[in-house]
Image 1 (cartoon, rainbow, N blue to C red):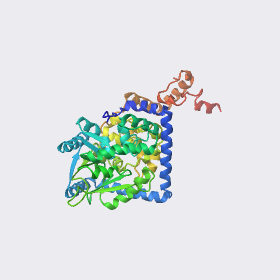
Image 2: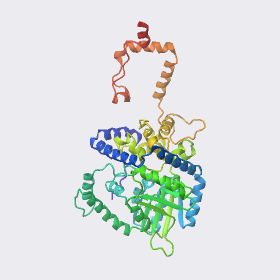
Image 3: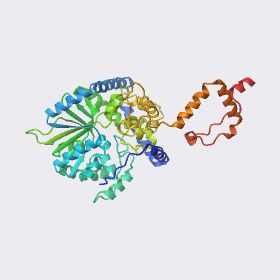
Length: 476
């Protein structure tokens, strides 16, 4: 298995990668078709706009209520899980999270870990940390398995291999899966992958899963899936490690159904997923299946920065449905890999700056047309456009009074840009200077440069008219 990571792409590389993606007609056609399909499926699940809005308001209130009580709920969750026999670990950053999981694996002399779908494990680069420690970490979600086999990262948080075609997967399996014959049959390709994974489930010492919702009141971890691999990862190996961000906690079980109902319909247009797993502890005496030992790793990794700011806290309401990505006119044309981050699309643009800092990600909030589609379809009503504008400003300005400083704040500030805007302000605030500039611009219009930074990438150059508006009106 290829352990080479697709490293985070620096901000300076985003525009180049986006341009390459736009030039790839095959990629654009594939993504456009896939996104149109998902948009139509979601729309079919919500035929009543008024009912949908009521559900969204309720979901938003549940998430805001949970976040308002987050510190207390996390402590309650830890107490209940501990009572249930689960060992709870806290990780401030990716390095700590990886070290905790590797230490557990080494204590059990594990050589193989099978993984259910977990974006947090992608976020902390767990697979590569495990490989460096001499432990194989194998993805068992079919889409994740495909991209791992090809040495890639997921391009979508719900459908990891959505950028790949059937023919590409056929060639990949024939080249990388031992004994696999070339076939273009989707059913046969799925069968090849399942045959590999079935053997791994039975021999793995550790299973790892993500968490969709963690219920503080009962100490229950809820896992949403379609393939059954999540259930295999959490019941067959002797040790189960669950990993999640600290924001996934809710207070009561009754808070889960409204979120679950919106998650599945917003993500894949399904009324309900095939499996909904509720895990409250390891195997008890007399039970025939389940892990003999269970751990939960709660990861911060920048989330507390978003939590500390009242406006940015709404970022943490996200339930990872991917609807904002499916409807984003930018994401649907360039795909997830152009962003270079674990979380692409609109949610990644507002979430990644907290994980990686604005210095590394300040270009991402500008990768939006601000059309508002992401905010309109978000099932928990995250005001994504407003947060994009906020982060754009924070990338350009120093800390403002009454606000929490973000890591890397002001990283995009440019002396040249400051000088340009200072000149613009001076020009437009002094009538005499403005008229003088207008006269000069019209008389020397032929000297206008043909290349005008990003403007002329897709537009004709701006050129002053032959006479100013004041002069034209005076002539009339």
